[in-house]
Amino acid sequence: MIIDGKKLAQKLNEQSRRQALQLKARGIVPGISVILVGDDPASQIYTRNKDRLAKKLGLHSELCRFPGDVDQETVLRKIRQLNADDQVDAILLQEPLPKQLNEEALIVAIDPAKDVDGLHPLNLGRLFSGQAGNYPVACTPKGIMTMLDCYDVHLSGANVVIVGRSKLVGKPLLALLNNRNATVTLVGRQTKNASAITSQADVLIVATGVPGLIHGLDVMPGAVVIDVGINRLASGRLVGDVDFNEVASKARLITPVPGGVGPMTIASLMSQSIELARWRRLARYLL
Ligand code: NAD
Image (tube, rainbow, N blue to C red):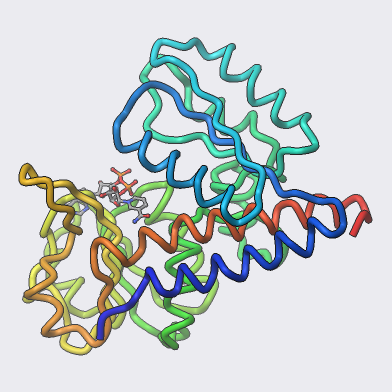
């Protein structure tokens, strides 16, 4: 069966739209600010899509653009200004950033209560210590967890393998799944006999940016396969990191690209921005 990320995302967005409406009745409009540096074409498309959807759902959305040669202090000043702005609930630093910027220092400067990508060390610490409660988690992993839950994928005791160890996808997923009592293996470039490991997985999640990395032989019959990759081929076609045709015939459940994880990431960004707006007011007893 193919997991319909588009349909699930529509449901989640409809829920977000209703929540935004309820908050509006109480004078609260959740606000998202995206910081975009340079003119990377893919980032421009992502940020434009985020901006459009946020406005459609009734959120306040603003794009803070900087030229590719901007200096660290200018971006830091913007982050401090957004931290202090009560209209802003969610701050997102769009990657990739140019080399002259110190990304770690910029992330640490974001108010953890507005860190919608869950990359601030305080939020990562909460996630990795298994803390329950109100803190943000990276939107792609969050969207994947929602997807697995909506399709009733049993996680406790399941053997889950994640291919790709990035801080935005692989690592937070490791913690989220481990917090749900899954047995999680993280596979990287240096992993020996990766195919022997992936082919044991009840749930296989692939986030490498290598088109068609995972073939039929790398997957256990009946596995659940989540393809995070978004790769544009020279022909212009979008493909994932999984050879869909080969793997779909073996998997019990599989996500397509496009129409799988992508829409869930952006829907999770919206829903988490609304949650941040609520949590910040709850923390001040305003809700
Ligand atoms: P990244 O480049 O930060 O990380 C990729 C990871 O994969 C690294 O840990 C790298 O070492 C590992 N890797 C690379 N080749 C490998 C191999 N042959 N075997 C094992 N591991 C390997 O990328 P990212 O931000 O995690 O994104 C990964 C992919 O997912 C990209 O295609 C990106 O466009 C896509 N992505 C999609 C969404 C979405 O919403 N669908 C969100 C984020 C990223």
